[in-house]
Length: 195
Length: 359
Image 1 (cartoon, chains in turn blue, yellow):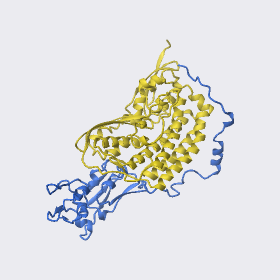
Image 2 (tube, chains in turn red, cyan):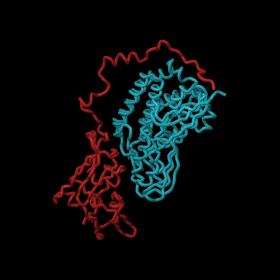
Image 3 (cartoon, rainbow over the protein chains, first blue to last red):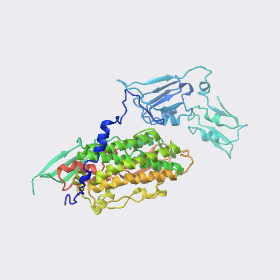
Image 4 (spheres, each protein chain N blue to C red):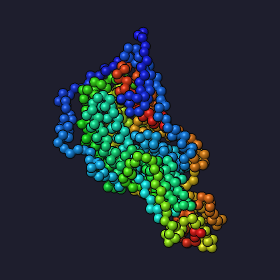
């Protein structure tokens, strides 16, 4: 095989094309920021870490079930939400699936540490908290008022409700239901109650 | 016949960004045969599809590669959308196209930097990567991540771009075009770069086709083939022609990639001008059942996606053939007859991504 058969084009007048930028760089400010002496600036959409408004959490466990690296744990009985920030990959799936939208992914990294640890937050148990009052209840349909519009089935994040318009049937898969209350909020006839 | 000796090359080598091992059979300094072995960074990501919800797996699919991450997520989602017969909104298609082309600019600039570094041209390497930083900042502002974007979902995309953001993208890539010109000039006209690359690693069009080369490798040998011409996402609405070069040497591969950056900038401008208003995703209910096979053009070449679903929320089989897998046989062909000192540079000209290849 013949190697280097082409003669490269020689342009001696372009001998130092980057000399100008090298000189400019000598006398200009650094292109990088002086972190940690200056604060780092993050764009608004940056996926830095997960935050929770624990008072709105209903411990449905959807975030833990759909976390790809398994960094989240939810204990319904104790009302706790646990995150292992060292396993979290900031994909934002938990925030996407959260029916109460109490999980958000916000800019900025969490602080470094010397050992792996988890962070546990406990839901306030005060009975007057609106979320706590609704948590745990499953929707019950008042067949007299229901118009079988299927809105509840469409909004259900778990696909636990099936509505047959023709047969006028409303069914709940109690195993799938997490009691988030989205169906009751979406119901135009207000015939769903969480009990 | 001269006495043959075998020199092990890799998996750790200063010029290799990722681990691949080659046993080089040498006659004096000339390579007569190269025997590759991979398997140093296998992570079993294809197998994970069997234990993860199909909607969750998008986040894993895009972690196959740190450079083509957007494309892997998109390819997987497009397969599922075909299986589930979902027609995604046109705006989502355009957004995917814009992000895909940004990935191409990011990947090619990375490669140009690595090439300059392999040649020992440090200032050119710095210039290329400095320019690449601007695309990464755009990714950070639009998707929330510099390398892993997590914006694809089955049924569309998760994040929208408003007009000011689209304008910022167009303005930035237009500025980049100006800044890229002196860098491109240096790659294409500089004496040092030319002497190092011209005539090195010749691959004829027949050989390239026979050995299954893809992407810039194939197009640099004069074969006008680009999977984007299949018209997936919004590519069917955009006006472009595959970039080709006739020579089939390392210089041609460099030239094709540089011209593709300019082409991608043009495609981003076209897509930003044509993007329709509307929703960015459609709701997806139920589980997929069936199988689909599709191709997309990743920055490094054609990638193949195959998904077989069985009606449950777990996919039965996900197969991904990455461009580097296809480009290894032509690379071995190229290595025959080259000097030992050129091996590192020749491996680099296929733009290898070993962790993609091994998944």
